Length: 477
Image 1 (cartoon, rainbow, N blue to C red):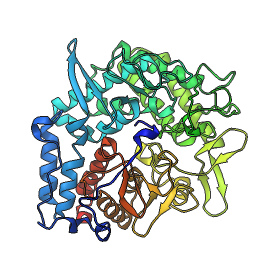
Image 2 (image 1 turned 90 degrees about the horizontal axis):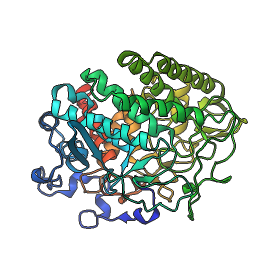
Image 3 (image 1 turned 135 degrees about the vertical axis):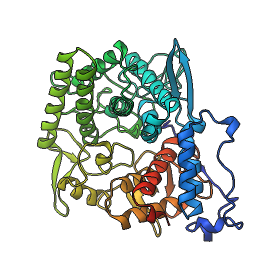
């Protein structure tokens, strides 16, 4: 996701929307089942998967709510339809994935965009090859710079952020250090390996990328010094730059890993970002398992596990806070000096989404306390309107902007059918007549939204709909 102010204009859909219709989109279409065709035409789609198309047909045939079927058909394949550029390079698959309206590949977003297709790849070799290409491309990017969060396909391309005070070089779009940028590629590789049993992407370069991931995590524990990474940007937005000569606010070494930016690409306040440290524990364990099974690098596997154990232990000691209303909860950020930032952000990893990332079970009692906090107005970024409620964040620069990602994460981590139904209802009412999800929308007026083409939100919404369809189809009407 590009986080610049010039790309955060609100897109109005006045042609389809009327004030009286905002919360009942089914009334938008006088022709009943005749919803407008908004999906990319077949001839213009970047990639077509037979199994994904079969899933769309099954969903539409099995769900009585025609609007939900229309939304699933538009959103679930959106990553494949519009954002993937797949080819074979030296007989190896290569897949470059843009976010949507930004021609750059984020390590996080590209994983999240193709993740919902993982359940289909064992029956679709073509789709499996596409995802192997994402793994290969991410490996290449991590080797290029493990501290960067977003890259260009053209390694000679110079970024609009070339004047950032950090180690920028051609081929890098942005160089904001975020723990999750190195976790997501492991998550995708692990799931691909488990589902297909294929070993081809996990060559010497992939091992090198894992070693760089381990090295970077250890550097950012900042046990003896601040490490090699610093970042500053000339900007009016404080969330786009780091204080203290580009190293961020100080931390006391604890064994946790510093993340100078959040998954929103906004700067952290306290550098120990708790959701991302939980994600790192899971990813390190997965990487250790893969290294042990696929290589002879036994020392590396042990080092990965040792770091996972160290971070896990530090989380038990430093991640929680005794809240006067909710009891023991997980903080969003800490600094090791006893300071806690109590909030949650919509971007994933978030506190709300931790079970979705396999960081902990939904039943974890501290998570359940934290969940109640996150979905309350004790969370400064929880917004509640007359018909919508959800989590936002400082990223879009405005208050009262709910991110569909947060509603989807809430639904994906809920065991309460009424809550899931509530999430489905809000999401269906939020598309503002476009047939797609958005980055964020105003809590009382979903026609005021950011980013008309944001593939991550679309595809994970499809993932949520498919999960409900397979497990609780009655909730889809």
